[in-house]
Amino acid sequence: MTAITTFTAAINTGIARPNRFKVVLPGDTGSIGILCYGCTLPQSSLKTYDLNQRGVPYRIPFSQEYSPVTFSFYATPEYNTRLFFEDWQHKVIASYAMNVMGTYNRFVKEVKIQALGRAGDITYGVKLFEAYPLTIGDSDLNYGTNNTYQTVSVTLSYKYWKTDD
Image 1: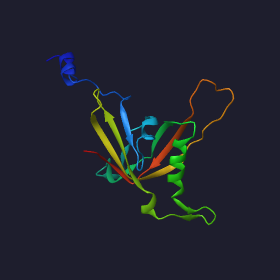
Image 2: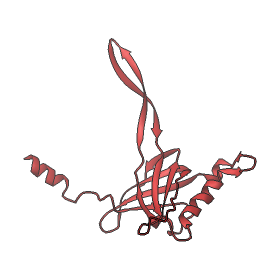
Image 3: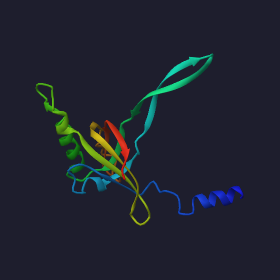
Image 4: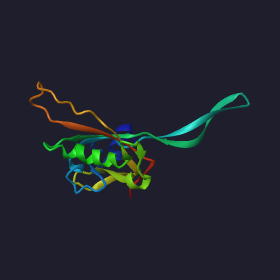
């Protein structure tokens, strides 16, 4: 079998499209998640330590590490997207005046990222467990930006993720 035949056979059902996805947020009726125009699937890496045995160095994994995920949203004229994440983030801090943290179970939620096929069916998905908004990015206001859309960037931290069946 030639390389081109092998390649063609491997992609006979097509190649995944990165512009077909859906984000499911806690407490959202669909009006916030639909405004997400960009995100990344979460990264996972292994923490290792170096071991040198019989003069041969190699790495031994000892833990898994998860990096925060950033989402990009369009903002509505009422800034509902930004308000949604500000309200969620305010649950993390119970009292700003006293700098008191909220109860962990009160602010951590599950978030889903779903890749979609051409027919809109879910072809792959991940679920972020115990997620919360770590950073709500700057939203620039500028007289010189007449023909652009306002966006909101949000970075979520989470404890771990799994493939969503």
